[in-house]
Each structure stands twice: as C-alpha cells, then as structure tokens.
Length: 449
Image (cartoon, rainbow, N blue to C red):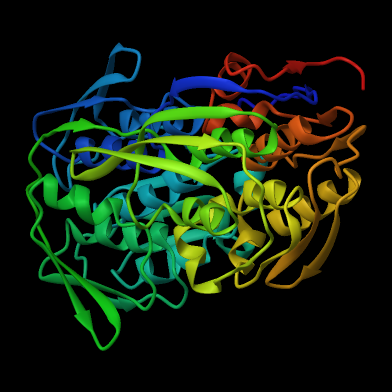
C-alpha cells in the first residue's frame, strides 16, 4: 500500500477559532486492536477505529495473514481472528505503506509462527531502521533477513520452536516492547520485558483485556512485564478513544490563533501519552480537563483550550517517552512563546518518519524563527505573538506531524505558510484539514503565497 502523492497545502493567518470536535480514534490503540483481534478465535468488534492509511495498511496485512476484517460503518469493524499461532502463509509480499507501528508489531506477531513473511513499505518506511525490533525478536529463534541496518524489504522466517526470552530495553520503545510481547504469545514459558523508563502501555492493557496472563511489577526502579505463553486470547468489544496525538494539533491551534476557544471531546488520556498537555500547561496554557468514564480500560476526557500567553520552558528530558510524537507541534507553539523552549533528550526524533529535529529546525528558520540545534534536540527562541514572518514553503519530508505542525504555525504567522506535501497527513489524521476549517481556520490545497 503506497498512497504517496504530492499535495501542496497552505495555511493562512487567522484568529478567533471556535469549535467543538470529536476526532478519530487513537492510532496506537487502533493498530493493536486489529492485530490482537486477528489472534483470537471469534469476532472482535471495534468502534472508533482510526480510518487513516496506516491503520488500513495493518488491516490489509492481517487479512493477508488469514484474518477477516469487515467494515460495518465508519470506524466500526468486525475482526474474525485465526487464533494465537494461527496466521496463514501469505501468498505475496505484505506492503505496510508508511505504518511504522504496524510493521514493527507485525514482525513480532508472526515471529513465533512457522511461516515466512516478507514485509515492505513506501520509500519513507523502507528508509527507517528496524534493528531495535529485530535484535530481540531473533532471540526467540526467528530468522530475519533485511537490507543493511535491517531495513525493509525484510523477510521474517518464523520459528517452529520459539524460546522465551527476558529482554531489557536499551532505549525506551513501546514498539519494541509490544513486538516482544506479541512474539511471546505463541512461545512456551514466560516472556519478560524490562524497561527502565515507562513507555505507552496500550499493549499491556489490551493484552489483559483479551485474556492474556500478564503481570507487571517494579524491579529496582525498573518495570518488569511478564507474559505467560501459549495464550488463548478471547474476542472483545473494543472502544477506541480519540487520539491524543491528533488532539494536540487542535489544542495547539487554539493557542496559536488569538481569541480562540476549542473543545476536543473523547480524548484518550493514558498517562503515558499526555506529556504534551502537561508541558503546555507549564508554559501557561489554559487547558480545562473534563474526565469521562474509561473506555476499554483507557482514561478519557474532554479538553477545552483557550488562547493563552505562553512562556518558554525547559522540557524535562525524562518526559520524552510520554510525548515523543508531539515535539514538532510543541516547537510550533514555542515559536510564539516568550523566551526559550529547550527540548533535549529526544534523539529518538531523528529516526521517525524523517529526522524530525532537522525538519523542524529548517522549517522554523524558513518561518523566521531562531533555533539552536543539538544532536539530541533543539531550542526554539520564541519572540512572542506576531513574531512569525511566514511567506515561505516548508518541507514536510512526507511526515504527517511535520506537515500539520507547520500548517498550525501558519495560523499565527504574518503571512501564509505553505507545506510542500501534506499527503502524509492521511496516515494518521485524515480529517485534519476539515477539522481546522470547521473551527474557522483557512487551510486549503494548492494556491500561491
């Protein structure tokens, strides 16, 4: 699945955004719901599923592995699983498009089933290193053949006799942790993952909900997750909450455009995902949180943001795992703050869809914002509202979060901001432009600066 095409988008200066929105489901939870549903015997019913290109790629992958996935209505899907260890031998290469989460989790899911699967993706995904996932997965006895640095295309030869492992994550990564746990489902004995810093825990929550025997305990300041193998997962009804990473762009829009008030309803508030909201509040943002009942074991809330006067801060590096995807939009907001916003300990950003540190620094400079780049992060030297020149074209590097961040920044610029290619936005937040314009923004395709 490769849907890449060029889509120029322009964002115009505006103020007084108003609106109440419900956004699409959480991308991380959507991937996991599809994969775990495919590993049950029976029908898993999912509502609120994100219908972005990344999740569609994961749906296509599990279908090629033998599961049935039917769309009943927008966001409403039924998955007929094949059981743990029941994936079929696919008759062709599986194309994961731009879905980095999807392919990494699927590498784990097929690793302990005796089938051979070749994964590929679009040009962006094929350039991303997979070594952090393949290194522990090989320890199960799985054979993996990829290009240099374990890049896609990659062939995974599942093992007949998987060996349970105990693995300490060298760097925080929910994707690596999840791949190991998924491989452990069809492995005898106990599979253990030890993480020094907490990462998003959607996989652990969902595995428990699907009936896996999983325990979590503190171990000398670290967290040890233990999964009993040969798990028989039970089909579930999964309600996917709104994606906090997508909500962050609408919250940012309310902070960038003067005299604005925006409410985003039904946002997932898993504490491993809410670092950006905490950081914005520390900068002075007025964000009201109305807690709602949990959905499928996940905390949920309505968020209301009001335009606020912001001050630059130093973001604690240890907060990075709870907001690693939100640093691009935080950098855009920091551009209109007064003073420096320092973001360090985020080298992980250099191996996302693109080198996001480099992409944000270059784009901000095009917009007239001063920055200082480090190997592990960058500083935005905010000059307050009205300091963004605009009248420029920013490269997205086919990265959805880079594209949306600069389109949000255009709201606060003196002149419009163009993004050279916003087509990747469809991978995670397909209704982004429609949502922005619903609130009163002016984001449109094509046109001249």
